[in-house]
Amino acid sequence: MKTLVLVAHPNLDKSRVNKTWLEEIKKYPDMITVHDLYASYPDWRIDVECEQELAMKHDRIIFQFPFYWYSSPPLLKKWLDDVLTYGWGYTSKGGKLRGKELGLAISIGGSEMDYQPGGGDLYTIHELLSPFHATSNLIETELLMPFTFFDTDDKSGEELVSSARQYAEYLLADEITRFPSR
Ligand SMILES: Cc1cc2nc3c(=O)[nH]c(=O)nc-3n(C[C@H](O)[C@H](O)[C@H](O)COP(=O)(O)O)c2cc1C
Image (cartoon, rainbow, N blue to C red):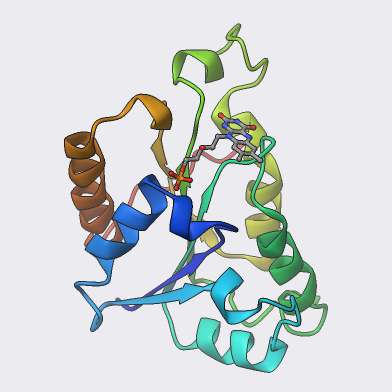
């Protein structure tokens, strides 16, 4: 199982969570390829052919990002726009990523309680991730249960390191539970 982690953090130098996660998962280069989108494309000109080739070489693709305005930072959205084109990402006969696994690893400033039904953020985290669910459905990938880490500002250094280990275990697992289908 070869895993590609596409990281979309606009300010990784100032990050606590995503930076700690990357330090941990970079220990497994034979199984996990880490690709930092903001570092690779400071001018936002995504090399579509290179991205498509990279995605094709892996069995599991993970979008890793901090939750910004209930979604991903914008360069990941541009990656979807540019890379998942009709004819490659999806066609009437199936796109090139068909059958691969697609996962999300998200650091979230708000508390888990706030993303429960009736909570302060109005929608559950699974509801807010529905555009990724619909995307996965269209490109015929298997969407995995997301790896989520809430309350980021209140976490100690120890808790960050522990979450990084759990994240590496998640990525290295042979099987990950599927996101519940509708
Ligand atoms: C521009 C911006 C938007 C954010 N929007 C949200 C949000 O919609 N919901 C939320 O729970 N946290 C939000 N946060 C908090 C981030 O999710 C949190 O700071 C981040 O996940 C921490 O990870 P890091 O240490 O890797 O940066 C936002 C933070 C920023 C800077």
